[in-house]
Structure formats: structure tokens, C-alpha cells
Length: 310
Image (cartoon, rainbow, N blue to C red; front, top):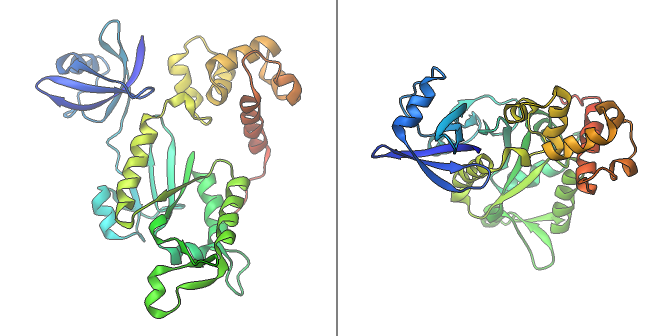
């Protein structure tokens, strides 16, 4: 059986491995891994962070996948302290404040609202402006990254007993209570999630934990099974499904290999699947409403005209 694993660390000639699909831990001899990698003309100084396909039957590396020792890109406008804590690289990002690529090849972008004042001022358009800052930032984030995330600082978010949004940092100036109700904030954020289903909204509970939470998000996404993401690149699927045609791999990347095979057995071609109504797709063995909706959402997005954001 072949498993996608990441090498966590190496001690006394033994490498600790973690199965990315389940989080299960295992071990393997360091010299065996190095010898196997040599067959791919790969001779790394350090094994930590490498992602490989490990054959549990032969106890050898079946395929070299990637090197996860990739730095997090930190936008140059973010605090220098964050750059140091994350061990990242300063960059001018087109979209988002932090970005990296997971071991499965997904691009991740985070738009961070580090203070309540920043969040509040970006939610609604100011006088004389056609739209709010967030209305420009979210579409770019969704367009540029496979996994777009809006990260909020929960420690900075508060409301008064009568339901108005507070900005604690301005309390000393007597300007902490805003003219907007807390429900308006929630409804606006909910509206973005409805408009952009791919958008994830995550929250840090402590200001000092924001960089640690970014690291935790990265670790979590690296452990997520590569087939659990609807946007899995089809070429990664074909690494492990050698008998798959290119069109089957495209479909498998969105609904999974088993569901893709059932669909092609039922309809014959991708074109026939695309032209079938929802009620017919629900008749495919093993396909439920979520699988059908995920495919239809992908097809709808591919037919949309890209939105230009100034």
C-alpha cells in the first residue's frame, strides 16, 4: 500500500513519518529513505519536511512528492514581528497578507484583519467611495488562491449590551462605540460567505496568537487528505490512479476517484455528464446532493467571466 507521508524529524538513524491522509505516525530507517531518494537523483542534506509516497509493502520511497520547507510569504505591509515569528519572506503580494503552498500543491492566501478598527473600516464603503475595501480584497483573494482565508482577531471584537460594535483600542479616546450594530457585522461577513462559498473565515482568540494560528492553519492544511479538497489538481490524482484518462482525472480531482469512475460508467463521457440535469446526476451510484452540487458549482465558476478588480 502506498501512503503519502511527511518526514517529521530524524533521530538516531530513524525517521518519524506522519500519514497525511489520517495523521497516523510511523517510522522508517533514514538510510533506506536516502537510498530510495537517490534513485530519483535527489540527495537532500536534511530529510525533515520532505513529502514522499511510501510503499508500506517494500518499505521504500515510491515517489518524491515535494519539499514542504517553503517559507510563508508575508506582505511587506505586515508587522516585522510577524515576519520574524513566521520565519517567512517579505514580499509584495497581489492579494492577501500571507501566502504559501501546501504539500498537495494548493495555494493558500490569508487576508488578516488584525484589529477591530481595521475590520470595521474595511467592511463598509466610506463617504465618496464606490465600495468597501473588503469588497475589493475578497474577490481577489478567491481568484488568486485555491484556499482563501479571512482571518479575524477575535480578541479585538466586542459589543455593547445594547448590541453595538465596540473597538476596545479606542476606549481611552471615548470613541470605542460605533454606529453599527453587531448584527450588521455578522450579516456582512455572512454575505461574503454566501457570495463566495470557497471563502473560509477563521478567528484568532488572542492577539498574540495570530502568528501561531497561521502556523497551525498551515499544519492543518498540510495534514488534510489531498482528495478531500474539491480543487485537487488532476495531475496529482493521476500520480496515484495510473489507469485514469485525463478527463477522468479532471473529474476525480473534484469528486474523488470512485465517484468519477461511477459517473463515467453511467454516462460514458464528461460531455454527457456536463449536459445532464441535476436530477439525472443524483441517479449515479454513490453520488449524493453534496457531490452533485460541488460539481455544478465548479462548472458554473468555469463559465463565469472573470471579474476585474482595480
